[in-house]
Length: 454
Image 1 (cartoon, rainbow, N blue to C red):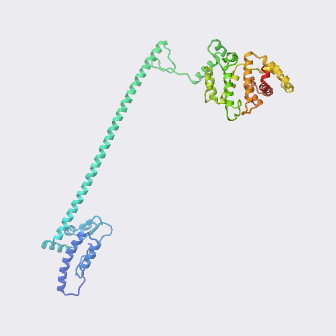
Image 2: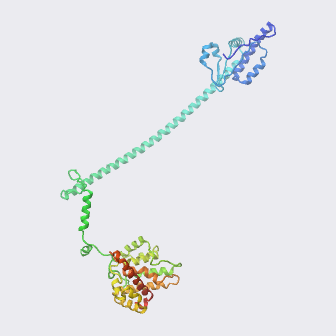
């Protein structure tokens, strides 16, 4: 038990002790009821100790530190009356224990006198318990309502999702039915083609009996392809059979190219490219470096090639076509024609060996070049006259400073076709020496265009 009796002796008489004993019991009982109502706080205990000084017997209340009282030990050691006076404060975890003597006094006082304070405390506790119960019940009811609302929302979402799944399943079933019908139609068509072909099915497809044909291996397919390439007809045979045709402008003979309306012996592509290049070159506010030396956009050049072959010469005048693309188209045309404007063998006939050309004076060189130009066909001669006149005008543009020597190095391979196809490495040195001589001839043709092409 958490209480003890004070058995200390006093100096007063036995009568005074008896009266004090009775008075101590009454005071103790009232104090206990006050302690019960206050929850056994420290302040209340201090006040009770001050009012009950000098009692021969007192009840000392002890407070547990942090743990709850062992109820099993209380059941074993206490009587039923002690258990009825055991109060547990949930907030502070404090157990208030009362002795047997104080309980007897309290019960006698309550039975004889019927103290109104005890009734009020009990009714207050009942009201508090009722309010706590009501608040707890209302809170639980509110939680249940929220839970029911959440479950309803989840059920609604699940129902919507189930409906969407049903719609998707229906759509997929419809598509599957259409695919099956399409497959059946394809099978019917294959059967009809098989019957029309006399029973020979295509490789990899099922025959009328349902057994697929065996595809040939990769080696067999490669051998068949190689044999087909070996046995295919030549380009000349295809031309004779009028299956393969030359391009209207590129990769054809100069006589077959479309001519200009005014210059009737000069190809239209040469006139249009030279005029556009010269126009852009003169109107440029900044120096243009590397004309006829820099390569234009290859993709644009090939696009213009196909457009010109389709007789679309206006594509050269598009705003996104720059001057280097135009020079690339003109050089491509000169390289792609089957016969060059001047062949290397024809040039050697008039200019002689490279060593002799270097020792020849200027007037003799001009006479040799004049005789070379006069020996050319009319179409070649007029085309070279127009091209070299264009080169001569370019070198005389005030803002753009380009020399005839620099320009000749860039255009000589396109005019003479100095590097033929299938050339061997041992012929490179000879070709380089011939290229230097031909570049000097082109430089003289640019500088003295008026005297050579008169």
